[in-house]
Length: 430
Image (cartoon, rainbow, N blue to C red; front, side, top):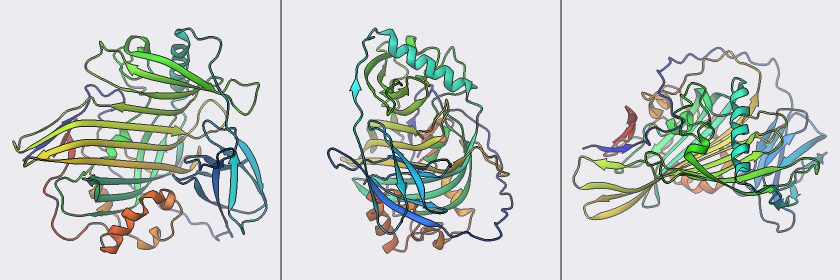
């Protein structure tokens, strides 16, 4: 039995790369651990009191920072107090908060930024912004960032969780994508089901806004010299920044032109109109098909969503803050239709420009997520009260349901799923 889910041809930023053997360098421990302080808090809209998910919280003058979870909450470990936090969120004015004590949770309110349409509304303006963002990203593409990334993936059949994977990578990135990873810790849990995804993380590891090795004359990516040829753009507005002397962030809606039939995409990109740096990007595409050699199984209505957000730092380039990749479809089997969804969330932290002595492996179509998890010893203490892992509390009930069954570890004992979804030769094969 085999089911195939074909990728868009060609997917703008998916590169086919050869596998690289992983080597983990020796880690030199600090001679003594310093006392640390843990800050807790919530970021809200000052006017509505609504929580602000994915707001950036950073210690001024350092590379230490985090982002709020879906409930606007954050935890941040710092070396000492007092200090000043810089808090920012797209659509709100950034603000600074002086912190002298960690005894009580912080409650930080941000004022809404003004959204306006500039006087210059000519159709060429959003194209100019995207073109300059492309040139800026190309110019700074070789700047590297090093840090860690927490990856969580959940598979659901008929809204019931059937598979849960959590991994921490050592990661190397640039201003457009992940360049390489090496696994630090991982765990996996599953129940018998129709499908299980063995390398869904490939989408996160391989997708990017720009590819220095791609043929720019044939590129279907939004950030490319062919944007005018392939896309329709609309300037939705400009979010004013905290400094009135600066322009703010442009919100631009995009969709592929109707005459472009081989690849379809739509979404929104946010660009800083002073630095031309991409702040956030969200894209949806239905441009792949699912088929099965089993006449009793058929897939329909597939949709892929990809979102990327970059840290709100000063300058022309910024590291990734988070990535979200979601796949939905419907599986028809034995006259029953079962909705399928696979969602992943990757949060980047402890990011710096200081190179490491680690060997980062480039993504490969031969990669298997569970093989990587099996290759390292499962450390349950690593996951207990881990503040980074608990960044997505909306999924805590899913984690708890698997933990109650004693399912976590390198693998789940018991019957294997009936089918396995993996990517081979540019296609997802079940």
